[in-house]
Amino acid sequence: MERVYFDNSATTKVDPRVLEEMLPFFTEHYGNASSLHSFGQDAYDAMELARERVGAALGTAARDIIFTSGGTESDNLAIQGAAYALASKGRHIITSKVEHHAILHTCQFLETQGFKVSYLPVNEEGWVSPDSLKEAMTKETTLVSIMAANNEIGTIQPVKELAEVAKEGGAIFHTDAVQAMTKVPLDMSKLKIDLLSLSAHKVHGPKGVGALYVRKGVKLRPIIYGGGHERGLRSSTENIPGIVGLGKALEIGMSEMDESVAKMSAVRDRLIEGTLSSVPRSYLNGPRGANRLCNNAHFRFDYIEGEGMILHLDMRGFAASTGSACSTKSLEPSHVLRSLGLKHEQCHGSLRLSLSKFNTMNEAELFIEAIGPVVENLRKMSPLNEKVDYNVATVH
Image 1 (tube, rainbow, N blue to C red):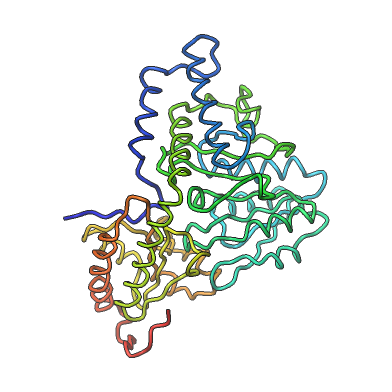
Image 2 (tube, rainbow, N blue to C red):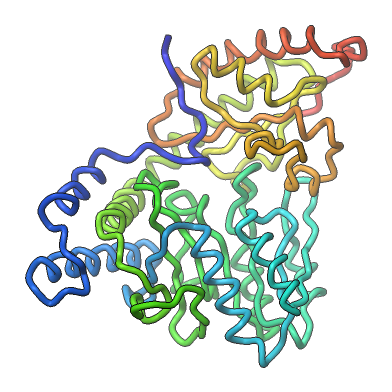
């Protein structure tokens, strides 16, 4: 049985060229980058080359890049670091209702520490309005954090406009770009973004390493203390193999971005068209076209549970995920889907397919052939099956 991996928003396969670049730093160049001897200097030089590569991917200087353990730590350093550093100016933060939990839970923690947080609503496609941000800004607002692209439904946010609104209001602007890197152009020399989070394992690099872009002059308070690594903002011995992998993954990802985006967009569009056409009462969550991530197709199906769909697809060789929170072993529906105005049962009948540059059109055709029978079988077992009316026109 051919196995097809459509869960690349969760994690990606390490590019063989990235692995090749990393391997010597486990067995040959294993020194501590803080050491003065040549072993240490080899590691230091490799780390600085990776910093230059990450900076180049963002159109900024290497000195603006802080290495972390991944997207979650980058988000925490950005949100907590900025909130505490600017607390004397104000204690109001603005974010959106569809952010990753790394943002939402950090903001909820800060609320227990005396900060006020405003959570902006989104429209039915998951889009944050710059006008709603402008209305929410106050004299106490010090930080705005809106993701570049949504991890569930693929909505690409208008970060250029949102950042401009934040800056005009006197706040600094952070964006979680974990899903957007190598898929959406993010040039720091052209955008008024002050802080940007990214992660290696979403771009065919290794797990356990990420980075935070910090615009020159932006003040942060560390959340980890120790030996003063990374300009004092992230103490801990650097993960050199991981950092090398991150730099190489971004170098490859940016050089191949145009080709990869075109390929993934074509496969995505075929998945959307084929699934909606072949499965009655199926719907697309999130926007179409240019405002959607090139690798995201997110569906919902009436009268079935996402958990069953994932397991049945897995038995047929397809790795996917669901928009409902069963993917995190919780019975609560996705906060992103609820923010779109969907009902509880609609959220639980959702399915996310996320692509990488390695997926093919043939894999899309195999999925389209498989999804119809899976949904049909699950509906036969559903206690809601009696309510199914297949004569109702599908709304695409």
